[in-house]
Length: 393
Image (cartoon, rainbow, N blue to C red; front, side):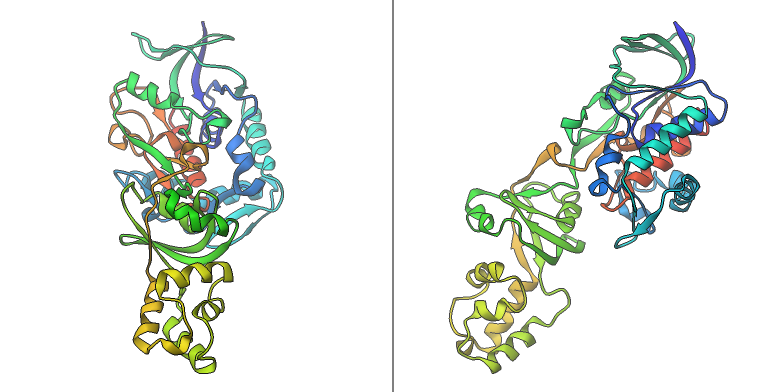
């Protein structure tokens, strides 16, 4: 039985970063992953440019049963700390929008930098290696079975991610380990995922497939003002992905297409200039024409603008500001960018990420019940939680 100080299960962002930090502190570290390549989610993120963090890392942009849990790690290893790593690696980057930071070049640069740092620190990386039985030893530490031999470690870090994007090998392995060792789970579900609609809604949505429009999407008191994209199954785009993390089945969302414009005043102006214009023609000056044709049937009877009173135009404007839609589901883990829920934070030490009742067992990254907004927040949680565990394992 080969003896190590630390075994990290999962060679994603959190696992690699934790491995680096532990190895730099003189630990004998091995990072193990069943995938053939490390950091696959890093590689595909941000359209291949890796949205590696966000300038606006604040607590209310993370979802968790205990929203304050993430604060310790996020404050001790900040976005500025990771930006310094990027600069140290010589990887150029830029801000795209809303504080989102992307690599100028391919995301593979980040993966290469992480694996290089791990190797230079003395850590090892085993890829294409399925983990079998994991046991806690009576004298302390853990026994991990792999096809390449049985390993013993004093500390075991679970960084296996969530269930999102199963075609890349995502599974519930980390959750099963948590349950094996008696840690409670918060119900998991897809997050940052496109929403789907019933067939009667898709009748008009499908012809709009590929159409993108700016809007403000609301669910309860939560709202996001970004792009919406019509698909053959429903709605996607940044605003929809964001609201999906708050939405639950059976609940409605509302879309505001005004984006701060006084729609009633604009429609009155259009009526004054052309009372014989069809409503859809006036709406086409405010939203894309294909969408305008549908909205005409939703917000008011078809007909010339001149037949609509000021109250009627106000009703149309209100429909544009508060367009109510009822999704029936989401596209699921197949396209979800993250998994909501996971290992209950009440069972973990916020400073070290160690299980409170299982000495030497740590959980970092997406497997934990901490989920960030779209736009680099989840990568920052991966860096911060991996760093926190890496200081102490």
